[in-house]
Image (tube, rainbow, N blue to C red; front, side, top):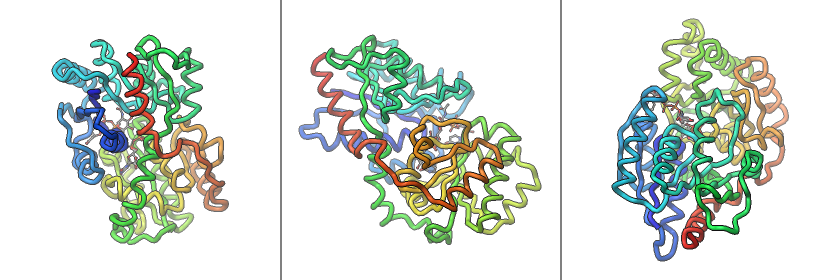
Length: 383
Ligand code: UD1
Ligand code: UDP
């Protein structure tokens, strides 16, 4: 089977590591993988670092699309992906998540009638103001295989009218919806001990295990809204001052730009003066999971970081109005606080006082990628 994998944004590159590992371990090499990088993320610490440290094969095709408005960026990607698909003629296209790279891959492949496999299918925020919600709905409805990380994702698809039977050979009109588990869980399990050996980030930052809050912020509805951006950054500073914990904020380039432009000068100066408030460049994945594993608390608007906090038994304050990972909130392992300073402070106090309830497995068994490979091979032989 010739599979063409499309990646572009940081979390997709990381997720691709799990699939490439599973593909490489298949006896007899039944899957040949061609990797296309759209270039949506291009800074070394948003892209190259993950190839260097996670053993992902170098991209065979690099579109170098870069940044732009949604329309410009997606259009350039569709054009480049279409040309690559015509040239490489894969049997299927593998897509991850909900970025503009996912959307472009889904549209280009579906129009060429090349079957699409969507990893992280079925997630919904039920908020179409999020660009990701639009991307994931379009991708799901173009897919031949929908690999769901959670039962909630399967249920969402059933509620949208997807047929859950898998007796037939899958097609774009009658796709297979499957509960595969989460490839990010595969990765966290695989890389946790490697990170422990190789990452020196805690020593480099001079923080002790359990002595800091790890925070990330990059959603456009926070970074691009001055009131929300100032509210979130003010709340992080407040948590640092109230609890005497360090804050580590590996900063997405989008957030750095918006902070330079939109943060109130007084707040900016207070953050700069606060020893123990570490605003650092985006971290590599090994450093990131070392930071997550030893954090006292995570505060984030990232989808991936919410889950990784849970994988490592660390409670999480979600800096969004809603989440696709509703299980985390339902089980008390995470709390929604949006960009509301009162709710952020209250959730932080709650978790610092009472810790996190016991973790039960919600995202599979660490073998989602193997399951996805098996289904692709099995159902392709039936097509
Ligand atoms: C994208 C995804 C989002 C995902 C996130 C992961 C979409 C619509 N959004 O958001 O779902 O959670 O990636 O990190 O696809 N920039 C750089 N260097 C880079 C990359 C970006 O400076 O290497 C800056 C550019 O100014 C760019 C901005 O960041 O305009 C936003 O990048 P973009 O890829 O458009 O969206 P993200 O916010 O990264
Ligand atoms: N991540 C990383 N370095 C960072 C921030 C995040 O390696 O500085 C990893 C994180 O561990 C997770 C993924 O990137 O695996 C999440 O990506 P991001 O937060 O950019 O996007 P989202 O998951 O919200 O789409």
